[in-house]
Length: 192
Image 1 (tube, rainbow, N blue to C red):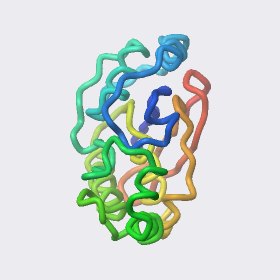
Image 2 (image 1 turned 180 degrees about the horizontal axis):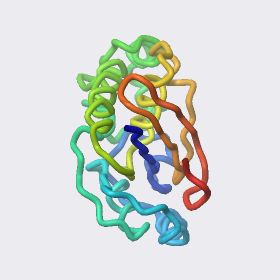
Image 3 (image 1 turned 135 degrees about the horizontal axis):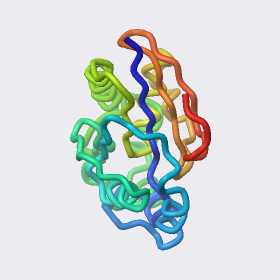
Image 4 (image 1 turned 180 degrees about the vertical axis):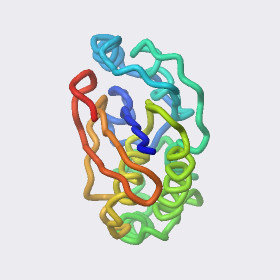
């Protein structure tokens, strides 16, 4: 059985624009308008899931989706750095920041390491493969990156080399142990 999953990254908000670790802020009016402009253009799915963050929930709503929150698709837990910009963290804790950016096992912020996120995303993908039909999920960019690293079998530091623009679709098709990946298409364009 082949599973098909489309991951939609959230529309633009202040945290994304400022490179701020998620502070659970709302979408910008321009981000909401952009999502509303593609509402109704996504292929129907047998199930629709959403990361529990405000920007993902609001993106799903603006896209006209009725989505079920999926805790396994939560963004990276940034611990005490939550709400701060990368520049602020770098100024306050330069060594810790560099450790975090270079070592996938590091979690100097007291939250989750990149490796732990990738492992959590991989576990979710294993269970997602059991669903027959198409899954659509509005998820944080780091979930898309974690799944891409997992599918490609890339080393942990590759996580930082993947850019996931706001409001783009990433398609996964396959089954447990063998997945294909299509990154960064505009929502509403042809899916797998």
